[in-house]
Image (tube, rainbow, N blue to C red):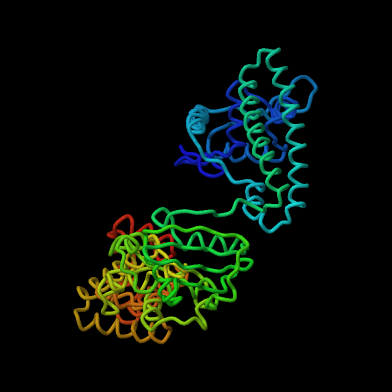
Length: 492
């Protein structure tokens, strides 16, 4: 069992934190719902856990469904009948496993305050300072209350509660210490901690520049490489100019910065060189100008380490490249990328070497248009291709090669008219087949293609044969293929 996000997940079911608390209470004795709600409403519990009655009853329904608790009715004297909940042996085992896992987990979710910190540069320092000081006062009150309850826990011998409260107090004190320093920074007029300096060997130059842009910085970002220096001029996050070493063009100076891992950088806030700088239309233009024709193998390996790397493009990139001065090779590469084919397959489709493809891809990767993707879409496409090939083999055995060709002539004609992928040819021509970008679109294509195949087989060879092939060959597929196809509605 492992802690993931807000869930303690196991193969059979999933325990939320609410589930874990309820199972822990029931591990001592069976209780009815009202009794559990009263237990959780005690001040010593409300100091560190908050569960509403609706969430308690909802959780019990889920726990009962998975066999972790049982319920029965009891009546005492003239009182109304009550539902009593008990933990099962399965529930007890799941509870113990979840406790062990939770003790070893280091995962904490980002809360709203973390999100506010991340975007705090959007706020004026005085306004942010006022709100943080309010938070400091509230946290101080919480720490005082928890300290008092911890003292009561000591007096009553409730050592486990004392452990919980000491943990909460330690977190609160750390938060308070952090906020005191943050208030001091805001009082000095700073929005957030600025980039000062660093080495190109340790970070991506593009990442630093993107952070400057997103934080709305104004000033000069200076990069020192071997024998060259380039200044990139920002005004409230907008890159408006470039100034290179005397005798070097802006393009040459940018290339020295973007294509080297040996150099240093520093940000000089507030400085401007607007009168001397060569105008440039934003960060993407600077990246494209500077990152072309990269020669450093370390940079290429950092981007695309393997010929088997699967390439995709970021959603919405088509709108971003309108009007951008891309080379014909860059536009050709973007036209090939579909989230299914590997770097080597795309290179062969364009007639380029793998290294040439990496060099062309490098500036597109830095702009964020080109991305590495997982194998989900490729696995699906190849599973469909193997399934269709099974059909092809069955038709050939039953009706001969001529019968097979007639069936697929029908399918090819109808699928071409509908603009569908020709799944029959995928295994043989993956490097030259262009797939739609969305997995949902490819899934729709595949369902329509298989439906066309079913109808063509039924029309040519009879409904009975089509049903036999559909059922029989589905059983012969590998388990992974069968699961993938079933998930997309191709197998029932």
